[in-house]
Image (cartoon, rainbow, N blue to C red):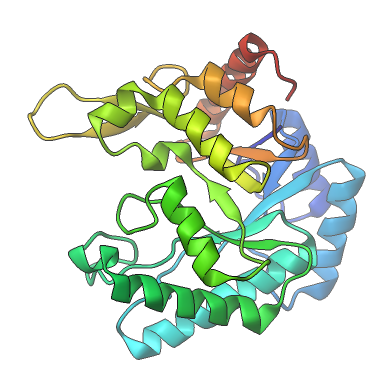
Length: 280
């Protein structure tokens, strides 16, 4: 696996950014957010220089809601995701990633009952096909973040969605922590990881890494993201399973507040990887 995460630098120079990743101990990178689909010369420079530094671009983010019921916003968001997918294909990222979308009205990602309906599922298939067919990527995959806020909340549902999409350019992005939505799954997360990797096989394009803890109080189920190695997720099992994937598979740190916290998280992952006997 290739560990990656954000770097904290003002530089927009590809050489400077590549060196910042090396200094952080990363061999995978998020695509710089300032790159646009029509920046052909800059994209070519990043692609060339990152390759020279043996730095893989894990993913291009396309974080928005293409499923919104506001037709003007929906068209704008579909065009945006299509542009980000084109950027991912041109720069050679492992994937472009977004949520599947939501019919929740108060933000771009939230839960509502209709997100689990067959009408929502069918519309998600139509919208995602439209995005993929508008780009026809050859070097990357359009992938979707697993979230507990819609039907796309488990590996089995992800595979059902991919089968319905019926597009070879649709791929798998795996965020195992996002699937932990009950105490039963939390306490049996090692078995969940084993089953997930069995179902997905070697088709995972990129992975997000974070840890979780379960609050024993109040009575409602509540989970918190915590520093890797301090929560309840079985990271030795998780990293051992990631280590069975193709060697260039990126595993990306996220959701941490500052550079020092990311450095501590990277060190924790490397220590746990040693215990799992896998190279990073």
